[in-house]
Image (cartoon, rainbow, N blue to C red):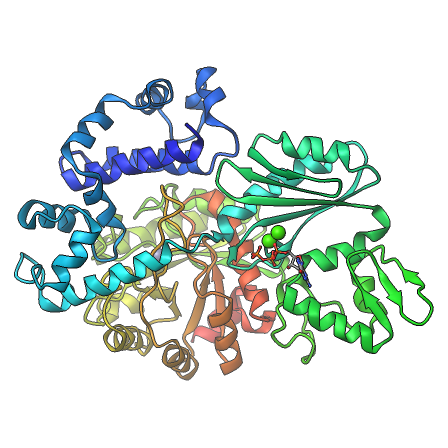
Amino acid sequence: MNNQEVAQTFSLLADMLDIEGKENRFAILAYRRAAEQIANLDRDINPIAQAGELRSISGIGQAIADKITALLNTGSFDLLDRMKHTIPAGVVEMLAVPDMGPKRVKLLWEQAGVTTVDELEQAAREGKLAGLPGIGPKLETKISANIAVTKKRGANDRTPLGLAYPLAHAMLKRLMVVDGVLRASVAGSLRRMRETIGDIDLLVAAEEADPVMDVFGALPQVAEVIARGPTKSSVRLYTGQQVDLRVIQPQHWGAALQYFTGSKDHNVRLREIALKKGYSLNEYSLTRVKDGKDFFCHEEREVYEKLGLPFIPPELREDRGEFERDIPQLIELADIRGDLQMHSTWSDGEYSIEAMARAAKAKGYEYILITDHSQSLGVTNGLTPERLKQQRKEIDAVNALGLGIRVLQGSEVEIKADGSLDYPDEVLASLDIVLASLHTSLRQEHDKVTQRALSAIRNPHVDIFAHPTGRLNFEAGDPKKAREGADLDMEAIIAACKETGTILEINASPERLDLNDLNARRALDVGCTLVISTDAHNPAMLNNIHYGVAMARRAWATVDRVVNTWPLEKLLDYLK
Ligand code: DGT
Ligand code: CA
Ligand code: CA
Ligand code: ZN
C-alpha cells in the first residue's frame, strides 16, 4: 500500500465514524490528522512502519501506529472491517457532495434508503427528498446542482500550490548538493506561484546530467520513474504528482530558466518581441538572426535586458499586461511588518497568545492581531463577550512582558446566515481591529449570500473582510477534498469595500489563498486596500505568509496598498 492509499483509508475511516455518529469527535479528528500527515509525507511509509518508527510522524500515536501496521501487513484492521460492514461505500461517497454532511447522509441512507451518489441524484430529480426532516424543495434542487458540480470536479487533477510547493523544494534541496550541480531552481507554474499546479518542473545546471538523473529517480518521494532521457526525466511521486526535471548546460542557464518558467503565453509574446529586434529565442540562447551569433545569458534577467525590457518577475508572466504596463516595485516578503489574523487556545488555535507573540517577534514582526472566533462558532470554542473581556486582560499582560512586539485584540466575527454579526456593536467597538468572515451557510444563493456579506462590509465596526469566498483548495486530512467558495458577486463586494474603506484579506493559508490573485488584482484596480494574513493556528503556520505575498505579487500589489506592510501607527490611523 502506498502513502496515498493509507491516508485515504484513514480519511475514509473518519468519514464512516462521522456518519455512524457514535465515536467521540476528538478520536475522529485524530484519524483525520493522521491521514493529513501521511498524505503529505515525503517518504514511503512502508519502511518507516517496518522500522517500528511510525510514531516519529507527528500526529501518530500508538493506537494509530498499530492500525497502520496491521493495514500494511494484512490490508485492513478490526475497526475498519467493522465500519465497512456497517456502512456501504456509496453512502460515504455522498459526503463529497456539498451540503451533504454526515448527519444528512445518515438520514438519507436510513430513512430514504439512498446508498449511492447516483441514487441520490435520482431521488432528488424525482422529488423524493423534500419532506424528509430538514430537507425542503429548495435544498433538493440544490443537491441536484451540487452533484453536477462534484462530478465535474473529479475531472480536474491539478494540485493546489500549497501541496506542490513543499514537495518541489524538498526535492530541489537534495538535487542542489549533488556533485557537479551548479544551479538549481523550480520552474513552470510553481515558480510563477499559480494557485494550482499541473506538474512540477525542476531545472538544474550541470556539465553531466547522468549523476543528477540517478539521484532524482532515487529520491525518497519518488514512487515511479515514468521516463528517463539524457536531458529530461519525469517521475511520479507517492503524493501523486508528476515532476519533470531538465538538466541543462551551465551556459544555457539564463535562457533555459526563462523558457521553462513560462507561461507559454508569456513566452510566445517574448519571442515575438525578440524577432522584431532581430533575435530568435529558445531554451538555449538568444540568437542574432542576421549572422547566427549566439548570446548566452548567464542570468535570466539578461534575456530581458538584451531585449530592452525591464525584468519581469515570474509571478507576472501570464501575458496579462506585463508587456504593456510599467512593471511596479512589487511587494516582497521582507515588507511584511505584522500578521492580522491568527488564533490562540482561546478558540481553536493550538498555542497561547504569548507563544504566538514570541513566534511572530522571532519573524521580525512589529505587531500581531489575535483574532479568535466569535461565540456562534461552537465547534471552534468561539468567545462570548465575557470571555473576550478576560482575553483582553491576558493580552494586556503579554504586552506588559516587553517582548518588543505589540499584540492587538481582534476577533474573527462570524457573519451569521441573516447577515447580522455575531457580536453587538458595543462589543465590536471594544476591539482594536475587527475581521468579519463567512464559515456557515456558504451555499446560500447568489443574491442572499452577497447581501449578507455586504451588510457586514457596511458595518462601520468591520475593518477587514477575511477570506472572502470561504473556499477551501483542499482539506486537512484529504488533499483531494475541496470546497467551493460562496457564490458572491465579487464585483459588488469589491465596490462596497472601496466605498467603505473595508480592507480585503488575502488569506495566505495554502488551504484558502482567498482572495486569489485575480480577485485581488480586480480589488486593487478598483482602488481597495488589502491585508495579507496567515490565519495561523500555531507558530509554524505563520510561515505561510509567503503564499499570500505570492498571490499579492500576482495581483501586481505594491506596499502602499497592503496595510500590514505599514508601521502600526499608520495602520491604526487608517482604521480611524
Ligand atoms: P502547469 O504545469 O500546467 O501548471 O503549467 P506550466 O506553465 O508549468 O506548463 P508546463 O509544465 O507544460 O511547461 C513548463 C514551462 O515550459 C511552460 O510554462 C513554458 C515552457 N514550455 C513547455 N512546453 C512549451 C511549448 O511547447 N512551447 C512554449 N513556448 N513553451 C513551453
Ligand atoms: Ca508545470
Ligand atoms: Ca512540465
Ligand atoms: Zn477563519
